[in-house]
Image (tube, rainbow, N blue to C red; front, side, top):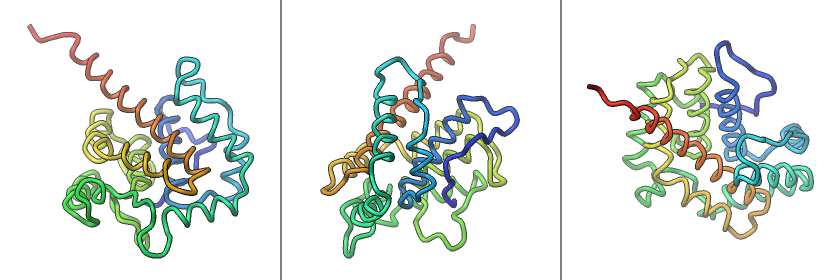
Length: 221
């Protein structure tokens, strides 16, 4: 699941504007969590428009504004050093953004095996040569993007499949992970990445719950 750069104008046939936006934001979070942003991505972020996706003052819009401001003000080399210090430092890094770590306390445990089984059933597998295990939060975001937009040769999945994947493999632990990123010593740019990720995931969770409520308005007679 090789991470994708944020899309600029990609619109597969029949994909709604809302789902396109969701896929692009998952792609952006995946990229930022899997590697430090390059100059092109920082420039695109710094020039990005406001989301205007929710009610005024919503945490998602506020977090987005802070992220694009940080992209405009911070030096790319400094951000790369921050990424390395947070996620790749010698020994045990301050943040290990892996599901198995948060769910069991150890890497490469049963949650990873269960994830690989589900990915296999969905026709997805780790890209050859990619070293990160599939339960890295960035890799899971990339999987969600593919489930939404069906790129990279995979089938686009309906909302109920997206929800099941999110609830099973992301929801149980992401909050602790983004808290660790936000509160880590030296987190500056990635503090904003974590806050935006948290806000976006909360909107996703609420949307999935709302779909359940709509589905349950009518009962069979």
